[in-house]
Image (tube, rainbow, N blue to C red):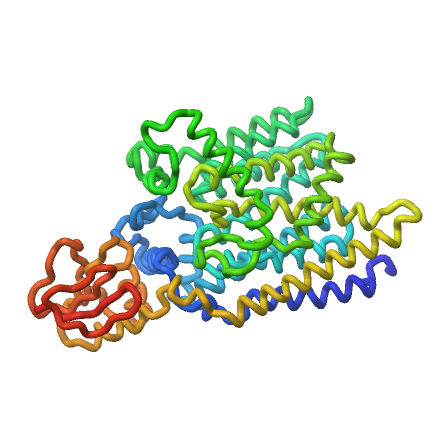
Length: 491
């Protein structure tokens, strides 16, 4: 009985853990203010699936969702559609869904630490560090497909760790591992490359008694890829269209040039300046002025890496963790963007797992090092909590990213709806902005027949009310203007 009682330290960390969990739901959905166009696209398609079983183009239960210049991955959209089936469409529900996914990721990481060590103390420390990590927290505030990816990755790691302790794998293990790898492929575009790379890491676990199970894992994973293969045959360039715009790999580039740029990007993705000081330069993904990783977490992860190299390098599980850390930046290293936190989303997961051997090292010192190790660990955990609290305070008190989420669009739509002319013409320089009108009109229960989208080079008819995006009007009467949008009447 006594062994099951919480120590004072555990009780203190449990209280802090409850505060961390509560932070995931503070000011949802008001922070960030607004709803970015990709969020609107995902939420609108989830609504059309939940209500009519079709996407915005009328395609019945598509494998991938055609959007503006890309095809969005299906798992998050279908999961949100299942929720909308009961709640109806709303920004609150969509943002809460991502918040729950973010908190679940932190809980699963804490559970993984508990399973690895058998210590509640280690599990609580890792949960707090994961819950306060800006990188993971900020993703949980956005209605993006990537919000589901970290949790799936941790579930995969939980199953793999449990399997690593068994001499022989029964069929549910390879079936589960293969299906989870497949889900990662269909959850986020980066998973199409990262999941196959992670599958290769299963070679570390091959033994005389396991090799058939590892092969079966590859077979199950391969079967999950068949729908994507069929889709690619029917739509040859669909899934690669977005990559053409975000990659530095262009026709005419030599292999040497491509390799040199890849190595440069790969090294930059491990930049301490980006991790600890700047973070993702895109304000939609990251609060400016702060790093994406906490200093204490990073120090513990680096110590954990050293402990693995010195003490656990022969263990297949820890070899896989190091391998996962090494391959995580590869998808982002093939693109133009500097430190794109969404494409690097697997990195913080493996960094947090690396904390575990470091914590165990500090909790199991030799003789005279016991006191210094305990003090050092306490100081690092305190630094994590303190810096995490500062980040939370900054995130919830500063609002520098309003325009990044086009928070003013409801005013644009109100201004257009206040006019008597119908339909309202949607004239967009990029094909993305029309979805704002569809989404916000859906929330207001406005008939979408009131809107008519036209190409940017097609003039609206005289007297028409127009919502224009990034296009100045000529021969028009301006009614309302905000950000990149205008409402005007064509003369």
